[in-house]
Structures are given as C-alpha cells and as structure tokens.
Image 1 (cartoon, one colour):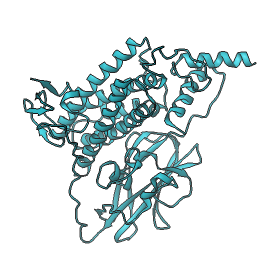
Image 2 (cartoon, rainbow over the protein chains, first blue to last red):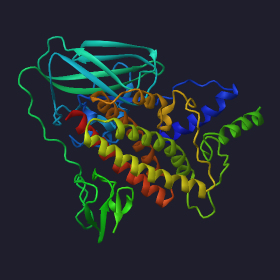
Image 3 (cartoon, one colour):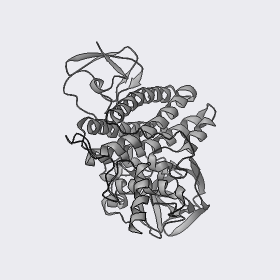
Length: 237
Length: 190
C-alpha cells in the first residue's frame, strides 16, 4: 500500500471516528522501526556504511508476515538484507548486548524476539501496548562466540505482521577490524570551493557556482544544504 | 443510504484530508485551472508543516542540552534550515488558499503521530531528559526516526507532486535528511 493511500485512509478515519459513525481498526499497518545500535543491516544501509538499494531510504519498513527467519521479511526489493556476503560490518560485543530501536511509528506490540540461528535467546513482552519512543533491550547471547548474525523480530499485536532486523556481531575475543567512518556522499557542485562533509565555522567563505557566500553559523555541510538554496546557513556576499 | 454515506465522506474530506480526492472522486479543492499544483502538493505541505515544527523543537532542545559540540552544531543548523523551509511551505499553502493544517491540540491523532511525522510522546521524552550523555544518544535516535518520516513524505511528493518548487524542496529534504541520518549514525556509533 502506498504512503499516499495510507494517509488518505487515515485522514478519513480521523475525521469519521469522532462522529461515532464508523469504527475503524486503530492500526493501519504503518508501524515502523528497526535496530539502530548496534547498527543493523538496514541501519548500515541508511548510514551509508554499505551501499544498498531501496532499503537505504526506508530502513524502518522491513515488514513481513510473522514467523519468518530471514533478514528481509520476504520483501523482494529488500532481498539484499539476507545476502550474508555483502560486507556487513560486525560490531564487537561481549556476552551481553544492548539493542536500541528507532521508531517512526509506534503501534501496539505482542513482543520482541531475538534469535541466533534457530535459538531464541531473548523475548520481551510488549503487553499489547505502544512501545515508548526510546526502547532498548539488554540480551544475553547465551555463550555464543565469534561472528554471529542475530535476528530481531518485532511482532505487532494488531496486525498479522512483524518487523525484522539482522544485526551482525563479533562476540568476544579479538575486535573485528573497524570499517572507516562512512564518508558523506560527495556531491559535486557545479563549481566552487563548497564541499559537503566539510566543517565550516561561522564566517567561513566559500564559492558556489560563481557566487561567494559567508557561513552564518558553524555547521558541517551536507548534500541538500547547498549555499544557493540554504539562506539559513549561507549569506551571499 | 447512498446519500447518507456520501454526506459522511464529504464531512471526512473537509477535515484532515482536505484536498484529497482519491477515496471518492469528490474534489473539494479542484486543482487550479493552470495545473500549477495538485492534491499531492497540498497534502505534502499540510503533513510536512507539523513534521517540521516538531523537528525544529527537537533540534532547539538539543542546541540547549546536547553535551557534544558537533551534535549542538548539527542541531542548530537543522533548526535554522527547517525554519526557513517551514516559512516557505506555509507561504505556498496561504497563496493557494489551502488551510495550513496545524492542529494546536497535541492530543489530536493520538497513536497515529507517525502518520503525520509528529509524535507528542517523542517531544515529551526529550523534554524530560536532562543534559548529559543520555540526552545526546536519545536525541540522535529520536531525530533519526523523525527524519525517516520526512524522507517518506518527501519521496511521495517527488513522485506524485506537480508544483516544481515544492518538488525541488522535496528533493532537498530527501538529500539533507538522508545525509543527517548518516551523520547522526556516525555520532551514535562513534
């Protein structure tokens, strides 16, 4: 279902319901979320650690029927999440790991389950309630060691669906070699000295497409914050 | 019965979904004769306004409370850029005679905040978090989730909107939010 269709359904539901005429189910299957730390596979896509397709835009949308044991929730366009050879960065951890979820919408929850292979290493009840905006679970890995692929499953209470996130871990022993911090995508400006990823103190001067700009406040330049279209950060000289 | 149902749908369309015609084919705000904008442009802006307002408030809290200077700098830049975008978006809605769909009641749409990209509980959590390392991690995580919502809305506008300037803004939102999410990811894990 497209976002637009969902929004339309919601818009109608929100205005009809107060009239007491129509009772619609509370959830319209727009619950969304994933594990951000340690970075799950979809988080690594969103953060540019690994180069990915559609999933980089919506790491929160790995939604499929309950009961699956893969990383992509049977969503075809996210299939690369289940590709173990893709160069996912494994985070070095001990026997106890704290997983933090990032939500874009919070709907009532049956439970959160954590699997290593076919073994369930932890389960946390959601009491059929909305989870809090920030949610962390501390999980004991039960003696596992070496490189592990952990599957986290968020089972939604009022839909047949679940959200899936795989987290690559290096348990105990030597630390996995750290991948370098992801470089911000280098957007090539048509011309000039402005460059995304550069830290500009207030008052810095850059040129961009033939115009000189002065930075109004300290910031790190990002794609989408080009001087010509961002008067909040850059004043033309 | 049909007439009664039609009336209900009409009522529905006059609220949050003003300008949305997809469910019934009834158009309450016909696109202008010159076709300069369409229903998606209006819906995008009406959804993006509260989305931006919440993002600005989250960023403002971080400029006051974050421990890390780089996080404070990012938050200040987000506050400044989104404030500009917000003014521009409201301006378009006013020019087009479309309501700026801002509901001052924070309890409106409870439980569906994610739909509009604003969720009062998220702000409450941040407001209740004192300055310290916890604040930084919480802010980065919550704003990441929030900006995913912005990307979702803006990509809808890029695909289905018509107004060139609104679509250009949506393109910049996709780029800047995606880059912010990457940067916040490095702060979270670094």
